[in-house]
Length: 400
Image 1: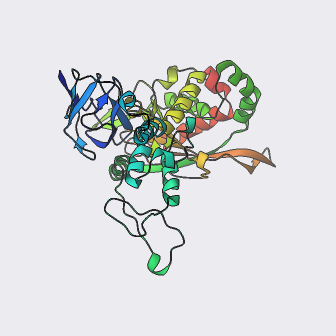
Image 2: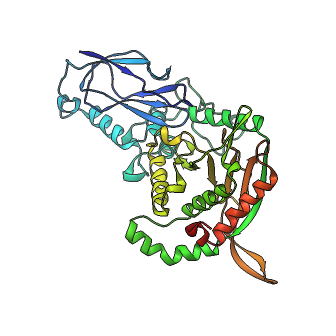
Image 3: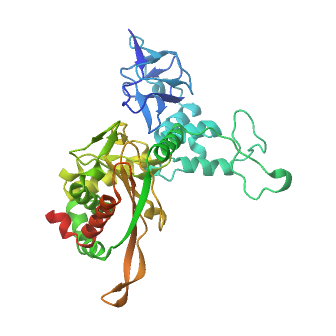
């Protein structure tokens, strides 16, 4: 029986996807749940598994096609079940072995780039978890690959060239990924539709550092995860948003939409760029659960395994530029949210306490907010509340 392979349902904020690369050819056998093709949306790269075992009898939409939810892209014949490809292939078949390694060892974004660079998995040494190949590994291998052409062709983008002078000045033109296109659209949308202002404050991180140092080893032993800093920031943000709910609200036409829940987006880096998975109901989660989920988000962001649902929604966002060494920034609001907190690098700095100059680990916090909805008073007091919660962590635990 022939069944249709369709694009799965996409969230409301995602209208279409791009077919990155078919992992199977027409006429090849596939196993149930085996990945057929990589789908790139403006949020994540997804794998589309086979719903049943069978033979891929027809590919309707080829690589690079833009598709919508429910669209038929291939036909699978479940009655034409044959032996798995690897068993049917001759023992001396090197291409089959290479294909198996590529599928198992490379992240989806890396596989796409490998196709563009005409590289195989055996040409690249993976640096990701479990030796999986990342996009950075592919770029590094591409610059070292022998026989790379010095001029552009239609099929092969130019490699990055350093030290070129005179007639060797080379430019490289590559299409923006769907994720980067969407980021660009939303940033322009945010700046053109919101009246964005930013207020700043500084926080002494010594109390959090002392608490973390005191319980770090025991926390890891009991819960099996390391005790980080982001959990403290999430709890401090929830504490402040409860006091000033307007900062957790959003504008919907001519109405103000107050959210009776706290879904906190936490920006994390991935091989494809910055993504913002959402901690649902952060106010109801214990501290250890928040730390576990943040750690899981970071791991799966690197592996390209975050789901669309995890990247959709949110009432407030935390962006931690401090992990990259940023000292100060003015983060841009993620619409339709009304505010975002920028966290920066904690550095020892001289400060005045009780008339004395002392050295303290200080962090500059930045709260960008939509002045159409939030007045300066609420924005400043929200940031002060976050500062107070971090400088006295007991407030977070006792909710006072």
